[in-house]
Image (cartoon, rainbow, N blue to C red):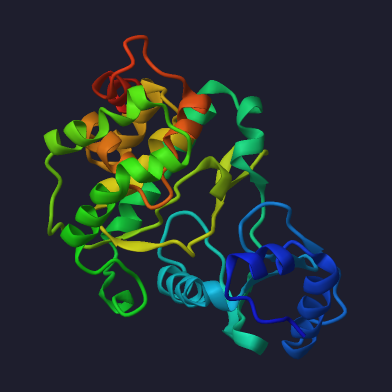
Length: 307
């Protein structure tokens, strides 16, 4: 019941349209044995995701993102029960009509950490970032080789080279000013990055938005959204940490990296920020601000320094 979606234009026409999406989701739920339960679409996220009653979540992937759907199902199955923070349990995954894929998973409990952050006492914030650091350490310590066939990028050095070659164009496309753009090539050339690191399983979007917490005691109750997972240098995952978890708070980042067991080099972290698949430096500058001197080395210290 869902139409073929292979282009950006088809995506924009179909995916946001609940008059198209909802009948397909209802039909798939019926096929999966969870039909008749209340169906509510989550407003966040790039993919269509539905709460199915109180116990299930259905995530849909059009053919243009079918490989992401396969990756999410495989990664969630791989990490199930192995992390100190709960992750969704896969209940079913497979193909639907016209190239669509789905993952039916358990529904995690708790409140989104991003929405709750301003209400969380300082001491509890410190404990939460400690728990995040510990969870990341476990994630990165897992054997990722069973996922080699479904997760990229494969050759990490080649990936870094590709991202480096397109870094200026990517930021220009997001509207970054010339004063910042002209610094990027020399800054990236000055930062040595490993070409063949130990292959760690990376979430790649470690953000407050992807954690759930229990307001009764402020404990982590969930980590989700593994569709953009990769295998590569573990430092790459600290881009999201610095930008979206600790958000330039040097004290919190120091606590998180201590619990993880690894210090971070600010220049390396900003280099990976510029090389990240979804990098958008103008957005980050609006969110976190910039040092007065307007240089990338100072920006690295402001966002990824640990005091």
